[in-house]
Amino acid sequence: MKKEKVQSLITEHFTKIVQKDCKIHNAYLLIHSEKLGIHLNMAE
Image (cartoon, rainbow, N blue to C red; front, top):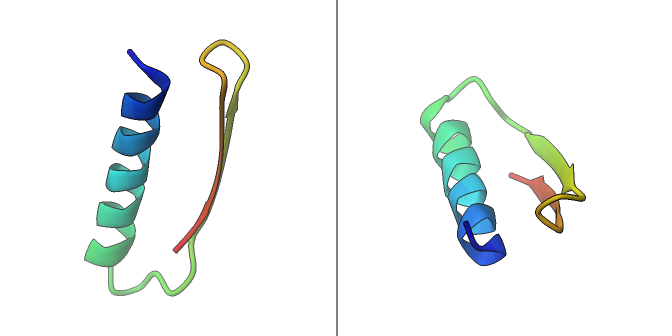
């Protein structure tokens, strides 16, 4: 899988889960993968 595709899938899934649950007010996600060359730091 391409780096951009993986980042896009993770971002979409994270955003969908956070927006779906009304009990979540703040959410943070940090992902680092040497193998895929990905470093994501997201907040919602």
